[in-house]
Length: 54
Image (cartoon, one colour):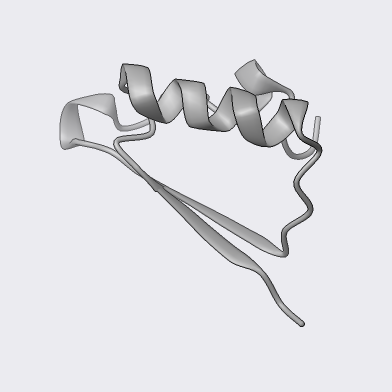
């Protein structure tokens, strides 16, 4: 089974908290899509929260 996750508002307070919870609970997923406003374009969320590659 493939698990695809999406976090809307990924650079906001709730989005950042969601990324932190996913890491803390060691949630396994196949795809993670982050959605945010245009002014947040280019922000490094995954590495900041220890999710994904180096």
